[in-house]
Amino acid sequence: MLLAKAALGLGSTLVLAGAYTMREGVIRIDVDEYHSGGSHVHLWVPAAAVPMAMHFVPSKQMRCASEQARQALPILHAIVKELKKYPDTEFVELDDNDQHVRVRTHGDKLQVDIDAPDQKVHVLCPLSTIEDVTSQLEERAPGA
Amino acid sequence: MSDHNKGFLARITLIAAAALVVSPLGVVAQSTPAPASPSQSTTSVSKDRWLHVRVISSDAKGETVRVNVPLELAEKVLPAINKDRLHAGKVKIDDAHVNDVDLRALVDAIRTSKDGEFVTVQSNDCDVRVAKLNNHLIIHVLDKQNSKKSEVEVKVPMKVVDALFSAGKDELDLVAALHALSAQGDTELVSVKDHENTVRVWLDSKNVMD
Image (tube, rainbow over all chains, first blue to last red; front, side, top):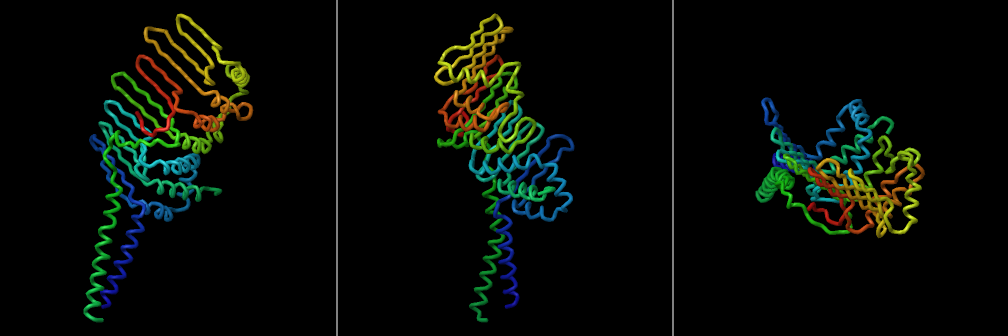
């Protein structure tokens, strides 16, 4: 009986924690470099985990990051806010014989694809995560 | 606790555990990007106005650049950029003079004048034509230097030109110009053609690139 209660409690907590963590989807980063010593990175991170993890970054480092990104933050904030209004839209496309670059929204996510002979980069990131990160950086900027 | 209750609890625990395992997969499945395909772009005809830029290069690399920007997005983002001469959506120009030409006076003169050709230059090197037609400022340049001709045509509604110069002295109001542009119908703004590149900048209500 006690074991069943504990299992139920643990199960429910894990379900809630899982649902909370995954509510914003995942950040997907795929990088493949096709040369000797090239790296191959395939990263799937729960989007909600990034703003949460930022709370554990030491204040000094956060202030330093905020200071460096200070000029870009309001622009990024404005862009992300506007991009949310345009799901599934292609904004930039560059093609030549060798390369293909694309920046688009895929639902509520920003998608960047770079296909070149020596490397492939695919990034998919929820816009709300970018917004959360920029907000946190703005809040923790020196003098904020 | 009865056997019935024990069974119920065990089932609940099993369902909870299964949901835990399955829920991230569901989210991951939703997050998986669709395969890249230009035809996937949705075509939406709405009140949104879109500025399109297309550059097609006919050289060996055959480069093509397509940029697709909602005017509303540009209007909102521009004021956030404060760099060098660009502040709050306005660009500072020195005393409204460029090479000793008083731009503001020039615009005032064009605004108040009737339709017609203001400048016509024809030479062996190039032809230049500046005109006002149907409330549009038209600039046409044909460069005949070398054997490779290039042609530039700019067509800007006068309302946009007015909005551009509506800010204080020594400033160009880009946001006001974009706002005025959004009230215009579908129109081609810039066209550049030379032996290697074709550039087009146009405005319409479609978010799809042709």
